[in-house]
Image (tube, rainbow, N blue to C red; front, side, top):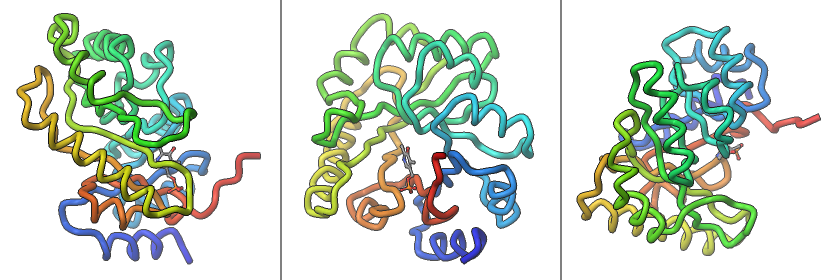
Length: 222
Ligand SMILES: *Cc1c(COP(=O)(O)O)cnc(C)c1O
């Protein structure tokens, strides 16, 4: 199957309000251009330098999403152009994003990453952490960032019941936080679901899915 037909196949099954992020990490620009020429405009990467290189070389109407764990010292390499940072998991990181966004006169949209998996290897905040961060004076002073939703990664398992519980949990955290008037927050996006579980994620309330291998084929990390 070609990248174009993979994309069309996935898109034809998506409800209208679900946004597809094409996860293009490790893939060559020729593959991304194939998706671009098929109409895809949102791409997700998990390494800042790789994303910056692709941004430099590719058409400027692409929206770039950082979906991976963000190191503070690298924020500066994406602050000029990144459209959405999915993996925000600390106030320290937000302060750095704010500082770099200010240099470019921008407001950078961010998602709080919530820990929904049982694996220790996955990053993320608890609902309490989010409440603490958003209630702090330091947070309310950040004028160049905006929190527009939440992101989560389910446990890597074949047990779809567990994955479903984790997705439902993220949706409930989202619904709870949405009822609170949090500063600098306008919660609209629930980013959850990847190639293996995006249909389930949508059933559980996702409106932004991050799909890589089902579009571009398996990744080769060598
Ligand atoms: C790689 C990655 C994806 C896409 O995974 P696939 O299984 O290839 O669809 C989604 N989200 C994050 C955070 C990723 O790192």
